[in-house]
Image (cartoon, rainbow, N blue to C red; front, side, top):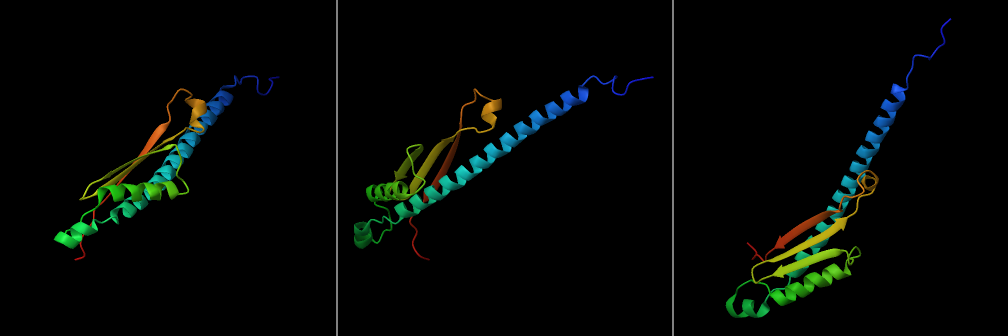
Length: 142
């Protein structure tokens, strides 16, 4: 008489274990990707708001004297940073660059995002960096 299960060598168990590790890796990748998209959306909102705030810094003297619509660069820089600092998500981990000229203002924000589940599977990987850029210029009404 033959015993049931004596011919099994455990290959299905190893296969399922490998499948579970693969699913863990895929889940970690999706969670980290979701975090990156969320961070990008947050930074884009901050950059757009700072750019709009800076674009309101019109040079009134230039408009009054020459009827030219252009920015006051110093005031545009101040308004952009005032907006960023007052934003609830602002922190020391955000790198901000504001470049304002008479014709346009650019705000660039950068933040590093650490891995979550992928940190277990890829322990020596550096965090990834999310960078957003926003540009605005004053335009006359049509």
